[in-house]
Amino acid sequence: MASLARLSLTSSSALCRLLISRNAGLVQQHLPSMIIPTATQQRSIVTTPIRRDIDSAAKYIGAGAATVGVAGAGAGIGTVFGSLVVAYARNPSLKQQLFSYAILGFALSEAMGLFCLMMAFMLLFAF
Image (cartoon, rainbow, N blue to C red; front, side):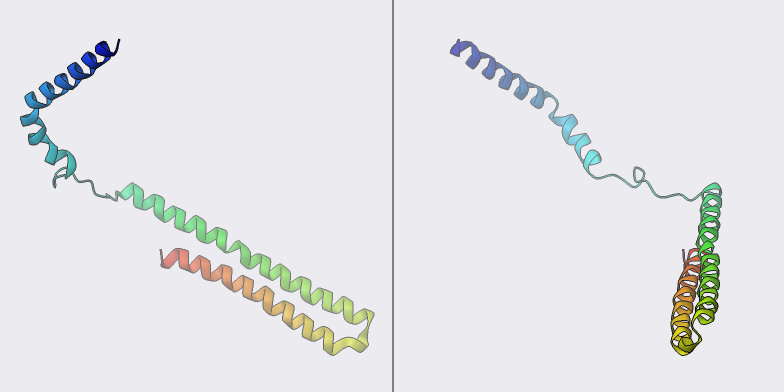
């Protein structure tokens, strides 16, 4: 049994050596072209007019979606000052403290709106 396994192992290695020796010229001839692509085989990124149109449409859609946050900022500012009026009507003696909280809420809401607007302009003009 061991001799049969040894025989098949030696015959398979002999067969491999025979195939390699016969095809050595072909392997040496085609191996460089398989490893290092030539100038005709290299692929480059091609931008077609259709691709540019799709990119442009995506930029406009993204900028439009980013400006939705500006409407949210407007709603937030309205909520802040509406709450200020209600709070002042309930307790007029806290006028100064309520107004400072309202200004803080206004500034935070406005900042979020400006960030959304900035992102829209970046999508349109930077990318």
